[in-house]
Length: 453
Ligand SMILES: [Zn+2]
Image (cartoon, rainbow, N blue to C red; front, side, top):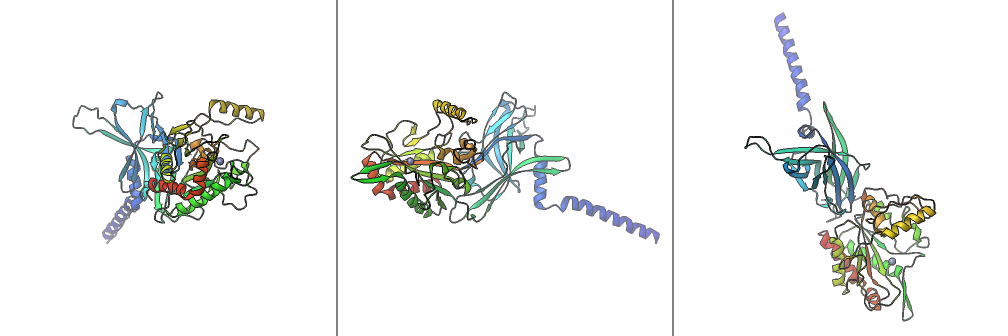
């Protein structure tokens, strides 16, 4: 009898032990298991992010790996999105081996290029760097060496919450975050991107339209046959029509001003809460279109279109805007060659002398000078909504105006300033007054084509 009891106790212990082992390895959820497999398969070193921005619809990252690699041995390097089923999606990166013996990579030099967030499929992704190297062993049949590295955030910027542009009344929410995976001896930093369908919150918009000037600031004025044409009125008319037109594509659109309560709107209200350079960030817009009309002292026979763009950016959308407006409104590209990059497309950055005079006036006012370079966009409506991508700098040190709450944001709005034509050209002005719909149509068509709406 005693023997039987002893046997039962032994069997019970074995069962308990088995259960404990079972719960350790098998009770983990499928997700936990995939995570464990993923993190145990990674290389021990980590890549450290040195730049991390979302500008318009694109995520752009730079980073480095503190490991001595040899140029000749590297067969390829990719950015990898790995889902929890172990499926990889690869993205191109540029890389170089620095003099600091580190491996450096970037997704793009252009702020509006890199990972297009609009094209990501729903899923939960771990972001890795893959480096494939030649196998240098004697064995000819040995395979090339492929290593994966997790990503550690070395920047001061944390999580980003992004909503994709409305298509067929649907949006995805994209959460970009950083965390640590801890399990026994393993302690890994990682970058995670989760894409899921979610209804666009009320306070989030796709596009912001900024009708230039407003309130006490009328902009340019031209008198033709006794009638005063005021820039702020024309930009408002066009802005309102453009809003309707883009909405017909299913986009959610907000105006920076709609003509009401404009008494208080002055030139210095642009940076504070509700300011025209801040609204696009408040509503997490992907695009900002600022509408203006050019003017010069002298009379011109014909004027034309000018699209002002951010610096260090791909100009595809800007060119599309210029080309489509020219065709649709039967106008021309501006004859102006200053700051011109290509037909109808202009990049206006600070010049050396403007940087010097900015420094001088800061010094005079007893202020720290702004950190501006010849890559910094001169036009505030292009610079400030872009955050760190466009070197926004209105941080409140100048007491003449409010601070841009988003000047240090790593999530910026892609901004374009559209000069419809010249008010000092009667032909241009009359075309704009009489054919507003055609100018609007050109902008609408550009969005339609560019975003495949
Ligand atoms: Zn203007």
